[in-house]
View 1 (cartoon, rainbow, N blue to C red):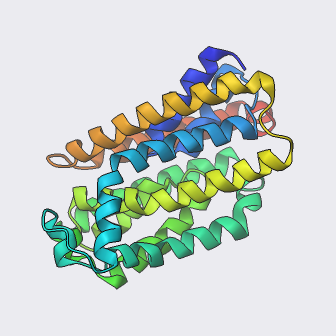
View 2 (tube, rainbow, N blue to C red; view 1 turned 90 degrees about the vertical axis):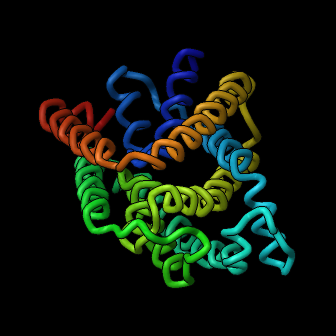
Length: 278
């Protein structure tokens, strides 16, 4: 796999995994536009490991405080957790729907649902849901007022991310906004909720590679570089997005999704044979 392709795809993964614009859609679209071959399962694992490192490192302190508070400790420097000691267990419960959906529908999502018409439809659909959430959201709740109902509802919405083009961050942030969370709090909850799901996906795919004999020698450098680049860009994307949401809305991402959906539909219509059978 050429190094320049490794870098481009790792940057695409790192950015789009955490912005509400769908990493699946972009990792399908970019190779098709440039005529690149499917990089395969090994590189997919590298990208998942990289984004897992990004979110794990960024929220490492938060997870330590969550665990401590969840098991009865005190975290006086974190008012959200002091006021909501059950937030860790809410996240555990909220993870279950997405994990079950992934186990039950992964093969279906990677085959039947991975086509441009589904991706374009979900790009449009979740874009409109984000717009609706911006219009209807009250932007009042912080993490300290997140309830079990809020967490469970956001967790159920995360299960929809198994469908290509939905965007895990997009659908969970939209759900959180509709439940009244502030934009930054919605994004933080979304990223915390994504951590165990990304970890599970990386471990499952990594186990499949191990059973198949491990990483091929020619993929060792692309694997390592893919992990490093997606981790760095993913970390930067998280930091940027959380700062962005402190003062701005999600409208630019709504427009981006709608435009991207139009482009995908146009490609599917004018280049049907190559898009449907790359």
